Length: 90
Image (cartoon, rainbow, N blue to C red; front, side):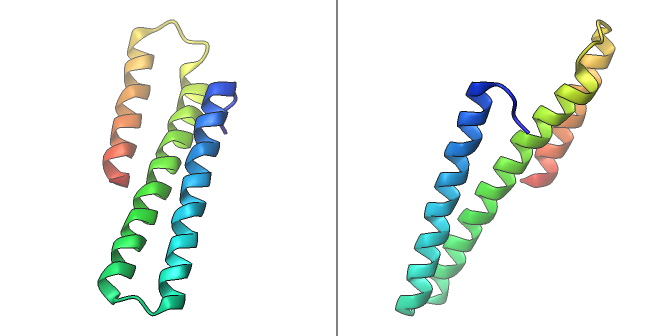
């Protein structure tokens, strides 16, 4: 969970954007939109969810494993884990 005010605000903005995307998906389904439009909206929602998950997970990794260590190798390992997770979620 993002704990700084800026990180919390950023996460909430993402959630509100996702809510808007799901509302648009609901309207498209209700209107009987073509499959291509629906699939495009679903892909956008999935990307937005993965982006949010990546940010929250990165914050968790930094808070759990990055805090309290002055060892630069430790910070490097946290960065490597974060990059790996971001790559997986794309």
